[in-house]
Structures are given as C-alpha cells and as structure tokens.
Image (tube, rainbow over all chains, first blue to last red; front, top):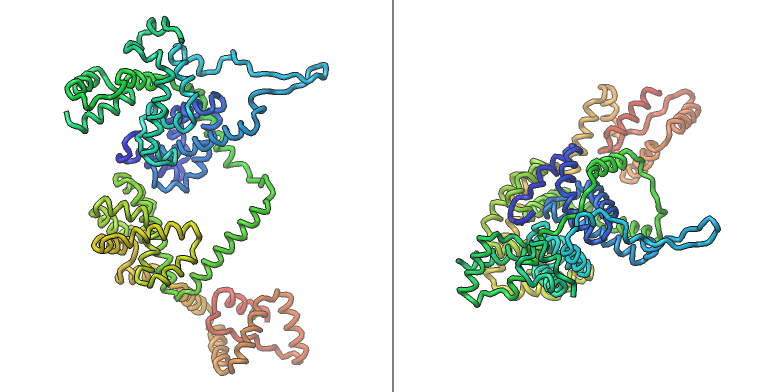
Amino acid sequence: MQTAKNSDPDIALILEIKKGKKEVFAVLIDKYKKPLINLLFRLVHDQTEAEDLAQATFVQVYKSLDKFNFSSRFSTWIFTIARNLALNELRRRSRHPADSMELEVESDEGIIIHQYEDKRSPVPCDHLIKEELFKKVEEALSKLPENQRTAIILFQQEDMSYEEIAEVLGCSVSATKSLIHRARETLKAILKPYLQTGQWEEDKHLKNKKEP
Amino acid sequence: MSKNELEKLKELALRGLLDDEKERRLRMYIETDPSCAIPDIDKEILLGKLLRNLPKAPVSSNFTARVMSEIERLETEPVIPIARPTVLDWLLERLVRKLLELKIAEYQSLPPNERQLRLFMTELRWYLVTLLKTDPISREMVMEQIPPEYKPLIRERLAHWEKLPSDIQKELLANEYALHFILRITNETPAIQQKVISTLHPQQQTRILQVLNEWNKMPDERKKTITDSFRRLFELSESEQNSALRMLPPAERVRMENALKAFSNLPPEDKKRCIESFKKFATMSDEQREQFLKNAMRWIEMSPEERKAWRDIVRSMQSKQIPDLPPLPPGMIHDATAAVHSSNLKTN
C-alpha cells in the first residue's frame, strides 16, 4: 500500500470489473477486508459493527466504481469511504446512546427492566489480545481522538505513506505528520511504564510489570 | 551515511520496521553525530514495534461470500423509493434543472461549429485532467477507457506535460479551473475583470480573486510559460479544431444527411409530390408560409382518427373530390414526416 509514486496495483482489477467481470470484485474484497476491518474495529470498538461497516464500504465501492476515475489510488479511496461510514456510525451513536448502551425490555410480570451489555462476554478481538501489554496499547489507542487514531493505524499497521494518509483524512501532509507525532506523544505518555525497557518482547518481564 | 539514509532509518524506526542491523547502524550514526539524536529513541523504537505487532482484528471466514451475496441481492432487487422527496429535494431539483437549462440554452445559442468544439474540448479536458492526476505508470491502463478519437490528442499533450518542470505542473493542476477563467479575462481592464468575476458564485469569486492576485504578482516570464503550457494542453490548435469538426459533424449537417436519406428512400411518385409541394411552397408569401407551417405542425400532431375526420369533412365538401394533403415544408423531410406522408397516401 506504500509508495504513492508506484503504479496503482488495483487498476487492472478495476478495469476488469468495469468491463463486467463482477467476480473479480471478490479479489479486491479479499485484498482489503483485513486492513479495513482492522481500522474499523479500532474506530467503533465492536467486531460485528466493524464487519457490517466493512460490508457497507464494499457495497458502496461496488456501486460507485463507475465514478472512480483513477485520479486517486484505489486504496486511499476505499479507506476514505470506510472512515466516512465509521464517522457516521459514531455520530449516530452519540445522538442515540441508548441504542447500543442499554436495552429496555418488558419482563413476564410487565415490569420494565434494564439490560446492560455484559462486559465480560468475549468479543472476538479479546481472544487475540492475550498479552497485557497489547491490552494496554489498545486502551491507549482508544483514548486518542479519531483522526489521530486513524492516522497512526494507517501509518503503523497499513504502511501507508504520509501522502496517502493525508488523502484519506482530507488534510495536508504536514497536518498528517503533526497528527501522527501528537498521537505518538500521547501513546508514549500513557504507556510510559511499559516503555522503560528495551526488552518488551520478553513476556516474563512484561507480565511482572505492574501498572502504577 | 547520507542524510537521506538517516531519514529513511528514522522513519523505519517509527514504523517499527527496524531489524537488528538497521537499528545498530542508526544508533551508531547517532552516537557519532549527536546533532542527529532522536529524543527518547528507545521509547520511539519500542512504541513503533509495539504498534506494528499489535494483533489485527479477526475477519469472519465467510466475509467475502457475504459481501458478494449482498451485492448480488442488491442488483436483482427492484429499486423502490423509500422516502418521499422533501421540500429541499424539490428546491434542489428545480435549481439543478434551472442551471442545466441555462447551460443548455447557452450551448444552443452558440453557432453549430463553436458548440461542437466546446463540447469536444470539455470532453477532452475531462479525460486529460483525469490522466494528469493519475500516476504515470498507471496511465496506459486508464487510456484504455478513453474513446479512440481523443487518444492522439491526449498522447501529444501528455508528452508535453512530461517535459514541464514539476512546479509548473503543480501550478497547472492546482489552478486549472481558475487559470481557464483568468486567461480569458487577463487582457481586459480591471473594471471589466471585476464585472465578469462578480457574475460568479461567491466561493468561485474568492478562489479566482486569490489566483488572480498571485497571477498579477508573477514575473512575466513565468506567466508566459504557464500561459503557453495551458494553451498547449487545454486548447486546440487550428488543425486540431478542423479535425475535431470533421470527427463530430455539426447537428445541422447530421439533420440534413438524415433528411436527404429519408428523401432518397421515398418511392418515385412520392418524390415527385414532394418536389411539386416544395415548388408550391417556394411561391408562397411570408405570411402564407408561416400559416402553412403552423397548419403542417397541427396536421403532424393530429391523431389518425382526427386526420380521418378532417379528410371526411373535406371529401363531403368537395363532393368526393380527394383533397390535397398539406405539402411538406422545406427542411422537414425527416423520417417522421415521411412516414406520416406515406401513411396518408396509403390511407387515401
């Protein structure tokens, strides 16, 4: 995904789809589903929601493919759509917090009772984030403002160039660099106790470390 | 180690991509030149590695199949309008319609050749700007999408584009729309320029004035380079104009060709009647012609039943004498008229 100066590797696939080979779209889905869901999960903090948003992204991309005129890279275009959908979802949640936080149901006796989300129930990502350190990093990431979080994930995990990230975020390259810098500063401050040593890979050492 | 290599190593450190050898080189360099030191280098390297190794969110195994089946479902499902249009939708639709009507009226008021050239230029500009924004390696693939008549012109312009200095390229791409406007008014007096600009949308005015301000401050030599390149890219030379006009015949020419084709397909007796009618028409006064054309239009617009009723009335008035059909007006011998004419003859 890096190096904006290289040819866009997706052009050949897009041209095939535009010619009517719908099945080629599955190749694009396979290529982008992991990075998209990874970003969306870190924006909405819900695995099912992330997959639903990724699905909506692909459907929108498919429907708008005729309008894609190659003036930007396909990868930045698809990430921009995904981010916009996630932002819409976050706005919707902020307007209707009850939708996801609390459910009202009527009991057999006709009494309204409140059901709260069971925080202990495992979400798929929890299975993967076994290490305490990764949990702390996830927590720290979730405290970042959305634009810093998106920028740092695309930079660190998707290997996007500053130019590509700027395009996804709709801001200048210098503003993008500044976002990434501020995100790293915040993460360093939050994770300070865990970054004291150069031996982070050694699980024993990390597990012995206590949160201050 | 060069400055460039140091910057690359620093970025790799931030991205968490430093292997042992590269990390050793980076640290060694910083030790020998403390002015290049990175604050909190250990923490930066660790944070980079942590973020890189953070487990990615899992994906359901049937995700691709699910999306493809959703696309399939949407394509086969009939489109049902969900929401009723709001007042805003209605106003927007009217506004867009009005703007389109104004644009169409503007185009229709142009002489045919000029209209065709403007349409040709608009399309050429669309393809060209898309290609200029596409990275050079991918251009050939995008070129496949472009109609063949535009390809030679675009290739010639791309070759010119590649020779331009990058600062001129950036200037042209960033301000293409504004330059298009400015070059049209650049030789006018400031008062006229202001008057023309005031007709634009406020946002466009701000942008044009900003670019115009920068333009006025530019040295003449740079202005000339930009103007020449702009004209070379976004305007047509005389020979290109001629070939564009040959490729896209004016609407009048197309209409005339269709009319002649329809005429040549008529049976000999119909052709004779057409010529006689035309001779009759040619001898009419201006008023008679105007009245005749109105009548002819009314006749064309009538339903077969109405025409039959009129024929019956005329027959009864002329005691079984079959009335003459309205002669065909000049320039109206197109397919529809010819079809009506020939069906009338058969009916009679």
